[in-house]
Length: 95
Length: 395
Image (tube, rainbow over all chains, first blue to last red; front, side):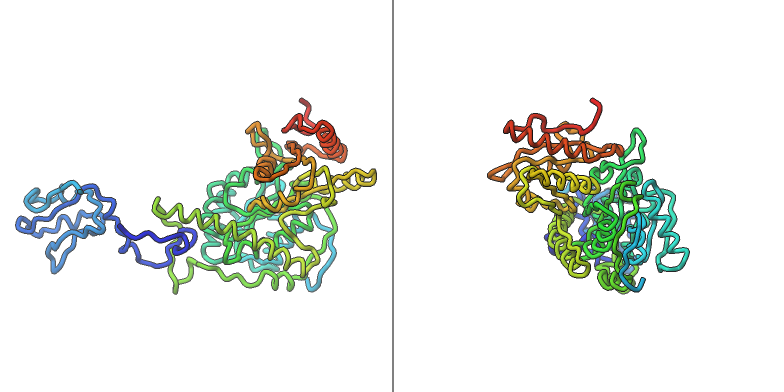
């Protein structure tokens, strides 16, 4: 869990005083199911990267590298759109 | 205006005059009876170039408050003014102004809420707004409306407060009645209110911020707690500013004003212009040797519960008069809160409530005399027969 600050330690009025801080807001904590990547079955077509609404597919040098679980909300769109289906991405219930 | 002057002005004129001297960066307003004069006088100041204010003509009060909120969020000293239905139309934005902690000052000329439609004075508009997170100051006269406007700027903008303030006066009775008042010089007002240094500004490119983001269950409660703490801080700030204003003008302001209250056995508690009528009756009855007095609240939000309890502790019978109905069947808003303030008191005076003056029903000295006579009857009986009654209504 992200550590929660007290009323004394946050700006008043709901103001976000540090720009670009959504990176540190871990929306992944909302997840009830998670996509699991199976590197052996992946053909690096990056269709998952195109569809992911949360930029949670990590890519390096044009290749799928993994999933950013800090921000993946578990919507499952990557699993649904993956042309390799279960061979490359599988949806599991979050423990 | 280079020096202090005694002038004849209506309550609305006095407020517009204070706004000219405050010289806000932005005013966004929509006319509504009986507030219209304020906007009209002020727009003349804008047209004459005597203020540097950006005046935004809007299509409704919802837009007036929205534009004022936008201006305040950008770090501007921003104001609007309204009455009755206009305040009601602002409703959701009232909560946003206080929730975003924007120090907006808004004169409100009290008028009843429809329906049936009626343009005259009662307090149903601002009494309905007690839970919107705004500080509320009530004014008996044009002088008090003027003085409250200038103090409101300092209260709202204090770093420990950062809350919006309503400055209320009675529609028509005060807003359109001409009286003699003392106004400060422009320089004195400028010096008293000082330069506004906003804590945050959405236009400050060196310190970019986001205003109005979604705040979820993990933080919204903390932000409401901050607001409650700010209201608590306002109790101290209101008194500090009132004292400082007293040193400047000789007119010191607190949470309320007592009139022949110290040794009074029977007391009327009433807001705004009716306090003037009550003062006359108090003097009349005092001449006959009756120990009567008046307590006129000025600040209702924050609610000065302990101070009111202390000030009324020696009274034997108290009539709390509400120019607004809650339809709870248990009395008006002021009555309920003052009665609650006495819950922990070891000794309580007899207390009763009058709903009065709805829709501009005139309250004269004879009605006030009746209230003091009812209190005398309660004292003779040793109990209150009718806790909530309607003054001068044809039942």
